[in-house]
Image 1: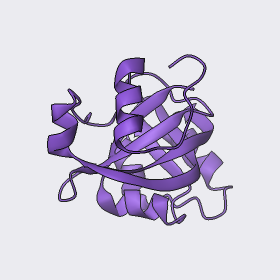
Image 2: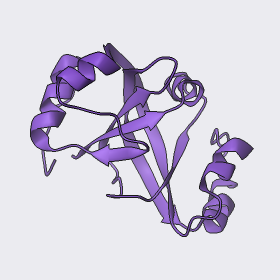
Image 3: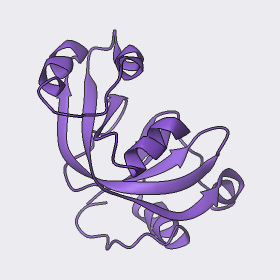
Length: 148
């Protein structure tokens, strides 16, 4: 299991936590999330805090056009036009299925920075030491195993 920190607009993050948004779209800018990875959500302004997390289910990497066709077959994916405008024009994009979304102990931007963590513009894989600190501070109930 690898651990990712993902920045997200609060309205989308809350939709994930409420079970309304079942897939999250990302431009592929770094490591591709794999099924079983832990995704910790940092809610951007005005919240500016880590608020929750989920386990990655199915992960689809393709062009925006191919991805749109695939996700049209998924009932209630939670993907809206605004999501598609975010990824349009990119060569490679990723859809991450949301499994077991949960809230966690909030950790503010200021507290994150004190721990040596800065939220990414989109998402980033965390090194094992930083992942363990974030999991502990947010009181996330998971066991890190496999390659972080």
